[in-house]
Image (cartoon, rainbow, N blue to C red):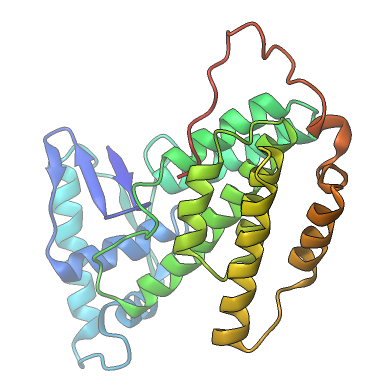
Length: 274
């Protein structure tokens, strides 16, 4: 069975896609957001009813879990949900749940980078990001608690994108990044680190004027909508671009060196970060 939460909730069993009514989707989503851990009945009640649970809320949660178990059994996983007081736990491996696979691939990518294998690290981080089927996890699940946890996951996704972009910029692969970065900055205009990476990619591609324009557009947004100047990183980067010293911010021994094996044509460039 395959559970997907990095986008709309999807459950695929031996009989195909399984569907659940809204309340069951919320309960299942909460269990999948904390796989292999006990989620208390009280927490499930909070997820389903926010701040106004009915007197029968706990019993209704138990009924939901019973229906979910029945559906998963029909899909080939009769033992997926176990009862462990004071709640329930869904048992998944990283081959069954995209969230666990994402976490595992990100950890592997970071280890590869620490081992001095940036190409492999970039490929692994790219594979992690490809698991996402949109920028919003569990889209469509109507629960304040689920969406709050989803917002944290979306933030983690952006942080991993930034790590992935950093590795590729240090490898001199800026040409493949600019269009995807521009879309990400447009969708997250106040995220300074993304804006900085777009500026660096543009500068490395010989587009200094566009890099500076990206900074000035961002500064205008910050001042007009937040009443704040850009942070230290963006201001320092603007000065570096004006002085032609951006390579110093990206480990010049990597940024200025030809990519190892790049002339052999054996490794296709990783996908665009979007």
